[in-house]
Length: 289
Image (tube, rainbow, N blue to C red; front, side):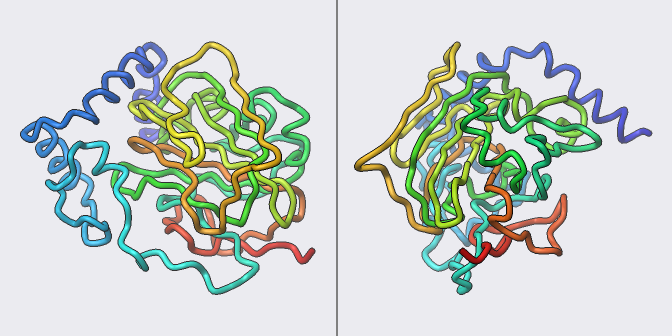
């Protein structure tokens, strides 16, 4: 009872906050290169969240030219090796499982009896969402302490990218438990890939203070904040990304949702909401095709 009340009290003020104004301010601050400011900001995050700098390619936190450079830091080579299993579907990020399971008639479980719609998540495009109607999903939350680059779960050829405008609620567990339709409400970038087991959607969901979502083939997709859905289609010389390769990154903590078609993958039985996961670990095994 008390936990529910606390979660609601945390979420309610977010309805009236100027999400995009705050995030634009964070975008500027995160790129500030004034040494005293950026070092104080970086050091406070490292201490408060217990960031493990020994895994970073540059372990000296004060060597980064800005907070954003620190936050999107690269890992040392070999820190997150690929699974040796050829049929493994890899985790795209360090973080925690928010939810994992089946998509039922286009509905995806959010938390505590709340669901959101796959078509709404992909900008209202029912044709784009149809292959995932009874498919599989995994929602992974990245906290501020986590590595914030996103990597491919499978080999994929990019077919389409969609930028969907929206709000920027927090995406932590408390907000997921209390804000209806959270992930289909927030601003997001969805990338649709063709893979050996059919279409795969990687949906990068923005959040408060997530002032930038980037992909490796496009660069910064957001900002700008826009009023209408934007779509890019790729054919001919489409970007091809290998399993485990970087595909994008966040500034500040957020969420990535992986969607695949029906019977494309069998999730690892032991995985459940709240479990910590690491980049490139096995989330499931591909269907034999």
